[in-house]
Length: 197
Image (cartoon, rainbow, N blue to C red; front, side):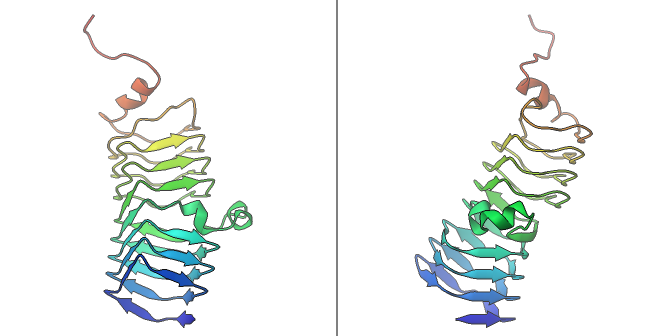
């Protein structure tokens, strides 16, 4: 099955299996994908708008240069959507994620430099071994979001809320933060702030 430039609107794919399908430059509007098993599928240059995607089970899937806007993306391991060789070359399963809830997702070993994540909610997500150089996290929600061994130099966290990560575990020179949230960085280093005994 090959779909090129097609529009899928208000479709529900719940607990289904999709095998060998190719989607190129397609638009998914207000679709719900939950518990979907994806076997040997490819999504390239597709746009997802207002979609709810959760509990994906990818097996040999390839996703590149897709765009997500106003979506709810739950429990996705983004590294699983791209083979290791393409990840090492800097390819990504998405071109952009805008104004979305990206909850309890995993970003491992991805080149996310200069990505614009401003305004997204990353509650409960985890970034490890990622390049976040000059990445825009302005006005994001980062409650219970983990950051470990990332290059976060010159990233912008102004207006972000809820973050708490180690400056010893991440490279963060010239990253930008704003008060009062920046005080959390001192807490992560074990520094106590206040006048009380």
